[in-house]
Amino acid sequence: MGAKWFWGIIILAFLSLLWALFTAPDRSDAMGEDIRNALRSTGSNAEVSMSGNVATLTGVAQTDDEMARATSIAENTECSACEGKKRWHRVQNDMSLAKAAPVATLPEQSPYIFNAVKDADGNVVLDGYVRSEDERKRVLAQANALFPGKVTNRTVRLATGSPNADWGNVLSQNIDDLNRLDKGRFAMEDSRSVITGMTSSTDARDAITARAASLSNYDGSATITVPNTGDKTQAVCQKMLDDVKVGKKINFAYNKADIRGAESFDLLNALAAAAKECAAFRINVEGHTDSDGSADYNQRLSEARANTVVAYLTQNGVARERMQAIGLGEVKPIGDNSTSEGKALNRRIEFVVTQSE
Image (cartoon, rainbow, N blue to C red; front, top):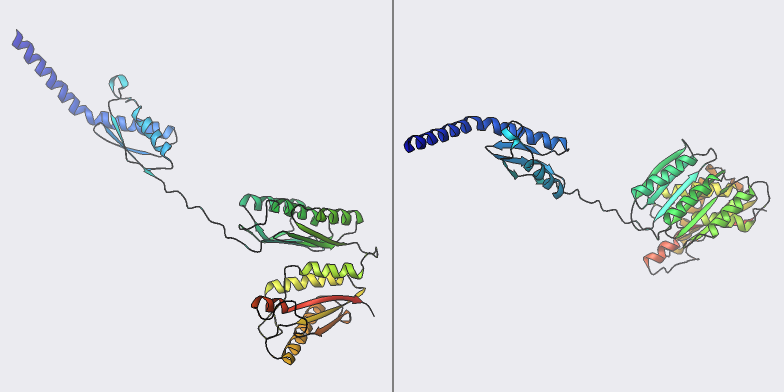
């Protein structure tokens, strides 16, 4: 009797083993599909392959947490095609971590500048630097809201090197004030802010002037004219020209009178606009050089450069009879001619407002 039971047990075990061997592939495939569906339902992009009772996860995870979450989901998935929905499998995670995108390093800009010009038709051109993409979006959104359809973003770029945390606030104020002008411009450089222009409202002029003078941590100034009020004195006109020139220079080709560089022409265009607002006065355009070369040569070069500037201003609407080109050569240095920095300071064009004859 005992032998019969023994052989019965052996036969049942053998049949069970055969059943397991024949059904194992189906159960393995079903388990893999169940794990795959569970992963997809949670938004995981992990892939799964089954080999016997081993579920291998592959794919790319963005974080360690995402990888651990995929393992947990796979381990806790039940087999829908198995009796009792048993978790009879084990999980091997062969996923890889995505490489972190390199952090872009912003260039450092010195001097840190921003310029905006509004013409008589309300068109506005922006150019300069801001500290972040969010700040660039705010600046462009503000400008487009105030000047819809008339904003040209020449190059508003990202850079480090701004003078202090007030840069964005001062920039926003200048855009607001530019909106109150009939035409004008503002220029920011490091901790200096200058706004010039024309408005028909004395209230607007006074408000902009007061706001510019009250800037915190900035050297702010404003030169705003109101036509037909008789308030443009010789001193006001001189200041207008001086303010436009702050931080800028008219450059020439080496040892020649040819104007060089887009920045030089931008400056001359701004000077022409300011000069036309002071039609009651004359302007002496003075050329200066460093001490390299002979005094006679420098005198001739300074005269030629002053005449070139006068010709350009004339072409841009400044009455020729209001201007006088004067060459002063090397006789009035403002820097040390023994250094390259001093020589660069001495090579310059100055504008002196005088009474009309």
